[in-house]
Length: 257
Length: 246
Image 1 (tube, rainbow over the protein chains, first blue to last red):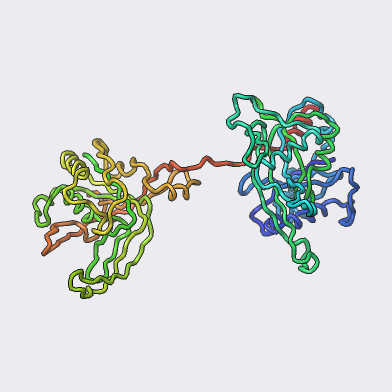
Image 2: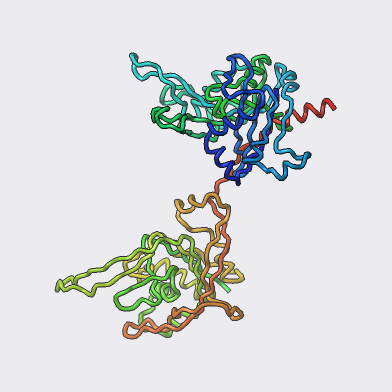
């Protein structure tokens, strides 16, 4: 497995085209693997190509890719990078590092900071005789509960804040939902409502655009089940993985906290 | 040297410097003749009393544009209340939703008297035109020991309305335009016929005064803390790994 980082040059028209549509960016990411055909479909339980865009600042947009093979992002550097700077072998346009050592090192009880961009959805019906329908979670409380519901299965536990640092009490909302206040070391931000046509031909998609809601979670976790967490990190979490969702990355906790 | 600062805020204001006949225009900021006239009215100086007006007109004047407002035009078709005869058609211009801080620099006892007069005015103050009452108390403060008019306008907090301040919440400080009378050594100023000599009803007279346009930086109390994404670089975990191996 490889972890790859590419900084997007947001001033270039090519970058605008890539950032404008998750579909275009997905195609660009998938075409960076020489051994992979676009028509290849991944088997359900195998590691897959995951990617995510981090909008850290207005002009600092990072593309992270986790993939089984080492990618070649030359075409991205040419379209939306700094090709002249990349001509120097010391500063290639992207950085790729083996991900395996980190995955092997994961052990139960470790604590990490994490970031995850995901598409939190649930299936509901409004009336009993209606088919169930996939619907996005729209409020931060629901989006957080979506992740909290999955944490055990995915091999980690989100850390809880000490009592002295909590500012909001938990309780029950007016919709009879459990509200956990700010009990967890978890933040939801950067909600994006995306809608785009899947096909260029209007008829193929019957005029219905793909629409999805993505949010970015920042938090701290403790590893419970290293094997399950490895699966989460390499196979993704949640839906819309082709559209930049589901890639969770770990970073060391800041020192002194 | 003392400075008296005033807050001029109201739904409508109208400050004419060259308003004549049926087209009653407004400047984009309060005029000295308007503000001095308002203070003279508050102090109970009658219209023809040029001798008592003179020390007021000798004050140095400056104004800060805290919230510029929008210019509105009123097509005025009034009829006489008793006879029903139509009055001349006129156009009247106003500044809507504007807020200004005006400052007057001069002798301390005179300014203290004016400050007291604004709290108990003989004739009610209005913002340039009788139909434009102030929305908030006019008197702000009497700065007893400031070095200059400019300094007083710099020190006064931003007086714009909360909704207007929220619009600028991305800025920690705001740059506000200041129009003030030039010092003796400043030569690059405009002139405006706005120095009141007499408010006598039968013959109003105004002389020229200088107008120097500068800006001051004032902190924005509504500034929101910048919320940027927390630092997260997955490569940190890998760097640590490679350092350990080597």
